[in-house]
Length: 339
Image (cartoon, rainbow, N blue to C red; front, side):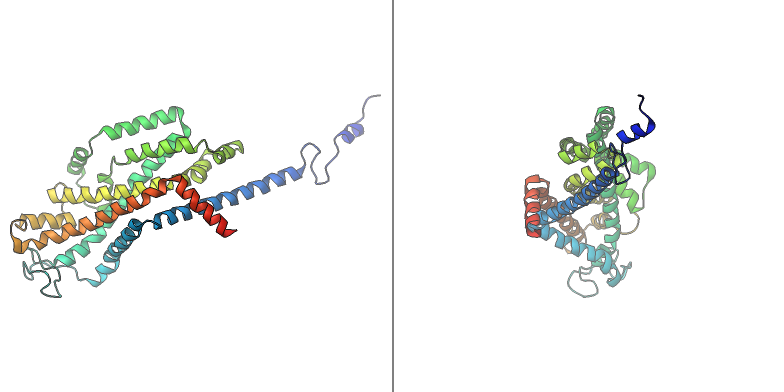
């Protein structure tokens, strides 16, 4: 006797949840529930990672001091420009510092208030530093993460490009590009100065990604069919945040030194107020050789030194953040306190 359609249907009964015996709908709902729980767990893990980074960084005195100093600089560039009058030319040249409240740091050879010039030069310096740091960090992080995760031909191509960028001498390249384009906007100046400083950060991030890509949570995402873009943004990038943050601060520090040096040497075109321009004008006026005029050169130098020192302290304070054992310790303490 041949089996009828009814008998065949009886061999594959419909599940009570509306699916079949082989593929019950409950399994799909369970998978969706597991995926939702995995996403929530991943978000919680990312928040714990950021909290651990903050705790490790704040436990170092150098991070605290540097953030306080950087906060004062931020106030100078935002609130200070609204309170301090913009410096004018030729009221009276070479007034000594701390002799009048109108010019607390004295005046330079052009009769400009040294304090007012330093304060009103701060916003353009900050824009330049931020533009250079974001430009170099974003390119270095993107190339390093993609290269380390994809490997193969993509890795070879990106690392060859990175090695070529590392072999090009930075200062001659900047001088040539400055002569060709003559950048005046702070954003363009910041990008120009950090034109090839991303290469070293890309190499460092790639070496770390090669280790992280073998972790169990990345393997689990690949096994579940999560696409590459989501793995890079959700799994890999949060693990690279300490290196990315340190790379941003380190590049910003380089932009400060390079921009002031290039303005002082007259390589970059003078446009508006800048600490390097103030140093250049004071030096040409003979402040370096005349003790009574030295304040016009000294205070812009101190503004650069304190800002650079704060950056260096911040990098050193964040150095412990890179250590995964220290971060894991703070994450476990946070979990225990949450329980």
